[in-house]
Image (cartoon, rainbow, N blue to C red):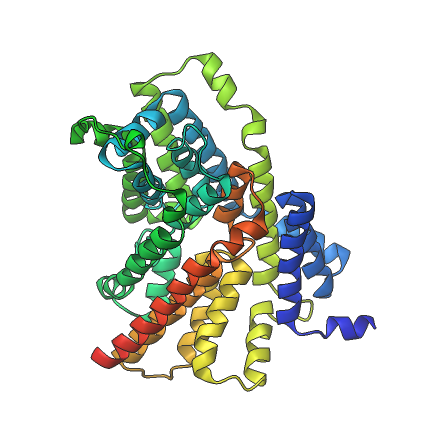
Amino acid sequence: MAEYLLNVPVLIKILVSLTVIITVNKLLSNQILGVLAGTIILSVWSGHTAAGILSISWERTSDINNIFLLIVVTIIIVLSSQMKETNIMNDLVTSITRRFSRNRSMAVLPAVIGLLPMPGGAVFSAPLLDSCDPESKIDPLLKSRINYWFRHIWEYWWPLYPGVLLAIEISGLPVPVFMVLMFPVTLFSITAGWFFLIRKAGKDTKAEIQTEKPEKLSHVLFLLSPIIIIIGSYAILGSLFPALSNISKYLPITIGIVISLIYIQLVRPLKAGAWKKILKPGKYLNMVILVALIRIYGAFIEGQLPDGTLLMSALQSELAAAGIPAALLIVLIPLLCGISTGIAVGTVGAAFPIVMSLIGPDPSLAMVASTTVIAYAFGHAGQLLSPVHVCLLVSNEYFNVGLARSLKGLLKPTAIILFAGFILSRLYMAIL
C-alpha cells in the first residue's frame, strides 16, 4: 500500500497538497496551519524521511536569500507603519483621492506599490488601499482581491522584476522587444481588474469624490519619495554594484528600504515611543512565519525527490509520457508551475527551459515571441491562483479573509489573462 501511494503521479501529490492548504485554512481560519499541513503532506508523500524533511527545511530556512527575504518582509511592515505614524500614508491617500475617485484610488495605490519588486509587497499596499475606505463600507474580501490584483499588473514586463529578467534571458529576446510584446497583457489585466473587481465596490458617491483642488505635483512626489527612493536605489545598486546581488538577490532592495526608513525619519522624525509601538513583534511575527513556511513548501516543489530527480522534471516527464501534444505542454507546464510555486522566478525557472526546448533548436522570431507571451501569461495566471503566493496570503492576512473565497473571486479576471496570452500569441505568430 505504501509503495502504491508513493507511485501516485507527482501532479496528484501537488494538487492534493494545495487542496489541503485551502481546506485547512477554510476550516481553521489559519493560513499558517494550512501551509504547514500542505508542506507535511507533500514532503511525506514524496517519500522524504523525517531527517530529509528537516534537512531540506533547514537548508531553505538558513539560505541567505531566504534570510534576506524575511528581512525584507519585516522592514516593509516597519516602513508602512512608519509612513502611517508620520501621516505620509494618510497624506498620500488624500492626495491620490483628490486626483482620482475612491474606486480609482483603490486601483492606483497598489499599482504604484507594484512598481516595487518587493516579495510580499501587497502587505505594504494593503493599508494604503484600506485608508481609501475609512468608513469600512467595502467588503474586506473585495479589498483584499483588489489589493492583490492591482499589485501585480506590471509583472508581465516591468524589468525590475527578477521573473521578467529570467524570462528575457531564457527566451533570448532583447529587453525592449520583450517589454513591447508583454505590455498589452498589462492592459488586459487592468481591464479585467476594473470589470470584475473595482466595479463591485459600488459607485463613488459625490461625498466620496474629492472636489478640492489637487496639490502640486511636487507635493505628490514628496509623498511618493520613499517609494521612489526604493526603486532608484534598487536600480542603481543593481547596475553599479552587481556584487550585492551575488550576496543575495534581495540585498539591493533591502538597502533601498533601509535608506527610505532613514530618509523618512529625517524629514518627519518620530519619537522613541512611536518607534516602540512600530517595532512590537506582534506586528510582523505571524507574517514572517507564514512567508518562511511558504518558502519551505517551495523547497519541496523546486527541489529533488529522494531518488535525485527534480520534482518538476518528474512532472514534465509524466505529462510527456501521457502523450500530451507539445502545444498543450507549452501552456500546461507554466500554468502548473505557477500554481505550484506561486512565484515568478520559480515559475519561469522551472517552466521556460522546458517550454523553449519544445519549439526546436532554431525557432523563428515569430515562434519565440508567440511561445514566450503565451507561456508567461499562463504561468502568471497560475501564480495568481496559487494558494502559496506570498502576496495573496499576506493580503488575506491583513484583511483577515479566507483563502478559498479569495481565490474564487479571482477566477474570472485570471481567465482574461489566459485569453490575452492566447490572442497575443496568435497575433504575434501572424504578424512577425
